[in-house]
Structures are given as C-alpha cells and as structure tokens.
Image (cartoon, protein in one colour):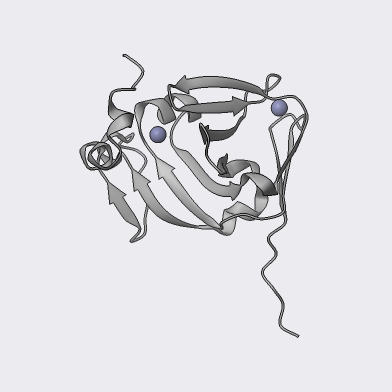
Length: 148
Ligand SMILES: [Zn+2]
Ligand SMILES: [Zn+2]
C-alpha cells in the first residue's frame, strides 16, 4: 500500500474563534505584493487555493468587499485574514499562515514584484510578475485599485 497525499488540513485564526477545515486543497503558495494585499496582510499576502466544495468554516467571519470583483474575509475578534475570493469563483484563496501544513508548501508565483516592501525578498526560482505584466493579463484588476 502506498500512502496517499493527505488532503485534509486545518487552520485557525490568531484568537482561535475561526476554524477552517479543508477536505481538499492545492499545496502550493501564491504570493502578492500589490497595494491592497500589502495593506491587508501588513506585508505580503501568501495564499493557497481550495475548491469551495472542500471548505468548512466554523466561527463568525466578516467579509469586506475589497474590490468590485472580490471579497476578503477576516475574524472580527482578532482581525486575522482568512480568505480572498473572486465573485463566482469555484475556489477560495486561503491565507497560508493559518495552516501549519502550509509551512511546507513551495512558492509557485509572486505577483506585483515591483511593488514589494524592499525588505521582503523571497528566494527560489518561482515565477515573478510585475504589476504591468499582471494587469495586462487581467485588465479588470488595474481599474479597480483602491485609491491612495
Ligand atoms: Zn480570531
Ligand atoms: Zn494582491
């Protein structure tokens, strides 16, 4: 018998009020340095995805409509970010830091590399994308930036 990859993982917010149980997920990390993600995370947004059908949340979360096409959820008690989800998407992007298992996930992409905090230089040979390159691929994102 070969051991199959365990797709069930659990995460929680800082205060423990919100628990996330996933029966499936994609064990790879996407990173984002855009203005919104920097403000939301305090530095860098590190996420992985899970299909909506595999997600079970317990505890109260608040949802903030951060842009016309996406929402970000957080714990109303401790403020930990929980997920980001594009409207109508079949998957959630989860804040990787909530999950102990995510400590072993490799980075696969780093977006808005030219908007990063200079102090945050991520090692590895994953894909790196500038703001201009990203917005050329996803034009709806650019017009939707929160004004400074
Ligand atoms: Zn909390
Ligand atoms: Zn971002």
